[in-house]
Length: 118
Image (tube, rainbow, N blue to C red; front, side, top):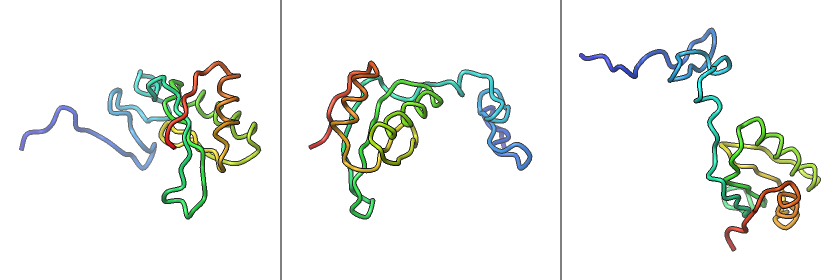
């Protein structure tokens, strides 16, 4: 069997997940893979209730920020709406139907949001 050059340690019980580029623990990764920006720069605000037991959430996708700044923006949006939420895979989720309030807040913060969906 030929060993793949991209293979190697993926997970260690001592340090957790490993970065595929620099082979260091993800928490201590210093390469550009840890600082990658998720999003295309076109901020889309939509409402979704599918798969959530009938509960409505407001989704903000496409914000071109690093994970730390994205979490801070999520905190600001949740505070402005007075509700809970989370940031998952580069998508900010705010509990409830707050599309207009989220769009106003994003505009105030210097983003150019677009309404997506119906």
